[in-house]
Structure formats: structure tokens, C-alpha cells
Image (tube, rainbow, N blue to C red; front, side):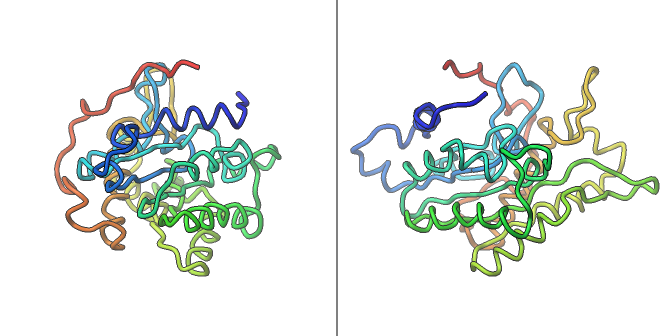
Length: 264
């Protein structure tokens, strides 16, 4: 569904964490927000999609309560289409000095048959990612690049296989060139799937009686990836020890909830 830039901005403002929705309070302005720009693997899911779960839905479980998460990730978007639809502009209209912007794209940038989404790894993909970096920096916020989480794919010998081609390498190179923190979730998730193996990984993806989805997560998968993200934010000193919690704790699946779809 195509949305106007005004509709995107209105939806973005509606998604602002409660701590920031009340203007004029010194306490709200002192708090930081972690924004997520990305695709369906990170996005908020609603009741009609349950049990599909984006890792952004689980990330707050690993962060202190007053570090708000504003999840702007949307199904089906690439680094290009997210910008073209005005979704980056919507974030930049809200983001403040000291905030964080996590940027994860590639799943849909790979769709060569769709010119509205396709980007080439070493040229247009990097060009679009620079828009996120430059935009966040101009607002005094800190951008963080996140390589795309891996799909569930194994070869005949049971080895987890990478599926994102040159995109992770292109993002790593851009992070080095721009001096930006990189969370290498592609490598970490691939290692996790290898450790779990062919059968056990089914428990982390959206495998149901009617669907065998090797891209999107269920609650355990979303929690596992969110844990990796939180650990990497701490390891790279993007967040301080006081900013994170429960990194080694069991997170109940029941904590994941799917709200009713937002009304237009």
C-alpha cells in the first residue's frame, strides 16, 4: 500500500514513545530514544500477523525502562523505498541530540525485479545508507549500522548458508569509511543458526501448521536476535552497562504481545 508523506509523518508521530508525547516536560527531554529504521525482520507486528514477531518488538526487554524504543521498521521496505516514502524524513523530524538510530536493510534491497526497492550493494545501497547517517548526524543523533539478520537456510551437509550476497560486506565497508559503529548481526545470526542446527532453528522462525517461513521470526527468534543487538550495543559502547538489562536472563515468550492493527 502506498502512503503519502503526510500519512507517514502522522503515523510516525503516533508511534512516538509515551515519554516523548507529552511536550514541555524537562524529564521527557532528558530521556533518549532508540529509533529503528528497517524491514519486516525488525518491524512491529499486529494481531493479524501473530505469531510473526520482529526483533524490534523484543529489544525493550533488554534496555532500561527509560530508554525508549521507537520502532519505525516496516514490512517490505528497502533502504531506498523507506526514504522514497518519506519514512526517514518522519524519523528525522522527531529525532533529537543524543538519540540513536539503528539502520538495518538488505532483505528487500536484493529484489532486482522491483525498481522501487532494488539497490546495488556497492553503489546505490551505500548511497541510500549515507542519507540515514548524514540525517542522524545533522540532528545530533548517533547512527548505528546493523547488517541484515540471516534467513534460515542450510546446505545438504547441514551448514548454515549466508543469503545476502554482497550487502553485508558493502555495509561493513561503509561503516569503516564513515567511522560509524557496525553491529554485525548477519555474522552473529548465521553463527547462531549454525549452532542450533537444521531442526532446532525451526523453533525460532515463523513455522506454523500452515506456513514454513524461513525469513521472519516467532517470539523465541525475535528475542534471540534482540539479545544479540543489545549485547552488541553494549560491546561497542553505544550503550553503557546501566542502559541494558537481562542480557543473560530467560525472557518469557508471553511478554511478546501483538496489538490490534492501527486504524488509518
